[in-house]
Length: 134
Image 1 (cartoon, rainbow, N blue to C red):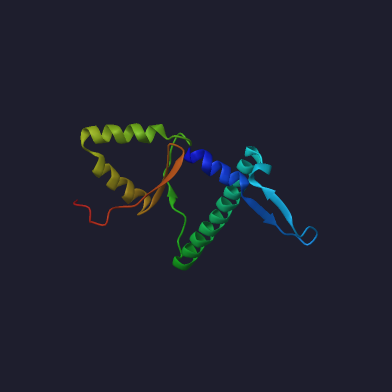
Image 2 (image 1 turned 30 degrees about the vertical axis):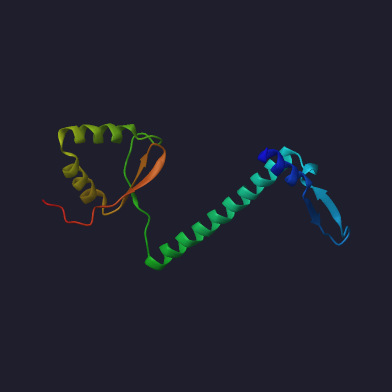
């Protein structure tokens, strides 16, 4: 009942578009098909996503420039997509209880920050804020 009342109110609502050539064009929501509404919403989302991506990229470039950041060292991997070798190595080290010493060796070898491709995503590794025990 409430849905039919809301839909009837929505379909009877009038949106007025004013342009210099046609001062009063009256259209109701019923004049638009579902696909047109979907395409309009999708178009707005795409524009929003592009604008946000540009804003985030500009903010990141500004931070990088202000702090003089360098690109992170890339951890070598045999597989450029999922890096299964590193994943299996980490699982074995965790089972043996030797993950932290190996992680320390990686940080000593590659520096404080290095990038790793994990399951198709780029991951950044930084050491924890505490000092290493050994």
